[in-house]
Length: 404
Image (cartoon, rainbow, N blue to C red; front, side, top):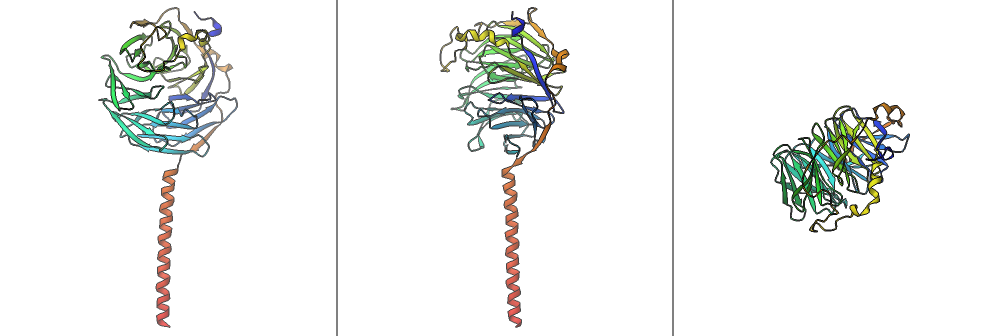
């Protein structure tokens, strides 16, 4: 059991969105948080006290997903308006709009080197985009229902996707083929992601379950049935030894993947929780949901695991054989909610937290491509008018010379 000093605490919270928060991500330098919402806006929050927040306006419908580029200079967003946007994070609001999907886009994810972006859509497709050329590259088709999420593996060689067809598929980015398939007869996965060393995937299920799969052995390793409603999102700690989950039951839960048990249940939101995300250094994690609040938690508990670096060795090759330093236990078994877990309810302490509603500056989308096109049209019209004027002048001079 962890002592009180290692328990996670609610450090601060932000208010600014007018509707439910659907997605959140920390910047690579851990100084900012970006959030997406049903209110159609993206917001950029600074973790520095007494600093303005920025609201990016451009999408025409619910923003379903967002992510910082690995370099931190760009922000990708997906929307129910069927578009993907790539934002330059400044006050000018410059963004590029990508159109290829024919239905709402559900997720965006950068490759680790920032060269590619993968998107998932209700048009049953997964699409890959080049960030250097900012253009569409190719589609992946095998799902037979809406694709809820698609994520790159840490080495960029694989993509994992989940769909309402109750399957999770693994794709090879070189051959562009589906190389593995996990199916479920009960529910479908709302969210899926690789663990930090790329040997396992975790799924957040509509059947209230969190599952860990070994993609080398094609085997279910762990099955947690700790939520009382659908699980909407999850995030691995950068060390890979713990997992945070968000559920429509209104709770955030933290799982110890080494010991294979639930260790914390966090009560902070009113209503369903839709998103959770660890910071890149693992010191913080954030959660957001139907109450339109962004909660910032300090992790603390990972200090216990940092003393054992052997459990955090990274795998260098996908083909490497499994060994005992991987996620425990090696055999699949269910994990029920246990009495020895700690429940934290910070609602009574909210008044003592740091400022929650910073001043907000609106940043309107400036699409350079569209603007250039309009300017070209105007220049073309101006040139035509000048030609007409010159022709009229020449005709007039001709008439005058004839009369004289």
